[in-house]
Image 1 (spheres, rainbow, N blue to C red):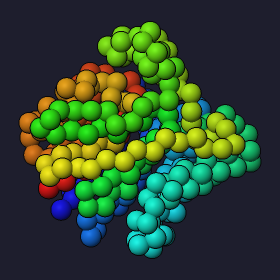
Image 2 (image 1 turned 135 degrees about the vertical axis):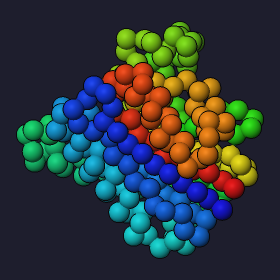
Image 3 (image 1 turned 30 degrees about the horizontal axis):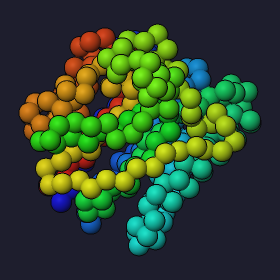
Length: 244
């Protein structure tokens, strides 16, 4: 069985929520979820994320299940291509939306096998009794510095350029996404989130809340409450998936 929950909030500082997410209710042991974090001005960021989520989720929803599961990675990639096209087209047509973009992290989970796509710095985490691991790699300036050994992960959390991303939907004519595959063991969780959550809670705090903080049904709210209590300068979005 698979269970899933999602939440989004504008946070403490922002006047508008520029995050968007989609979560298809668990059906026949399959989950489809998308999280996007928009950028490019008060109005445009919201437009970019909502357009991307709608384009990606509509494509994935309309595919026959058997076709989607033949090659989930290929279909996630095509969903990102369509999302990129939607954001780029709107930016061309609407002067107020020029320069907008959005991150994306998305998953197709069937049974215990997950296919994950990411562009930007929204993340996917795997959490369980063996600990927490970041599945995706951020497309950001500081992540590149960490990868080259010039920054530690701890230093990256407070680096002044931590919000500068190197890939986004809408930023280029072609969507450049990374794909990941993993198997969820019974009792493990997959967390998709925007940086508004991952910047406020450490990996170990995420792990504690997911495994020990209370029942899974209230976990997204608990993590959001912690982010809000710490000032939540950015929008906060989380989707939590449980394999049981």
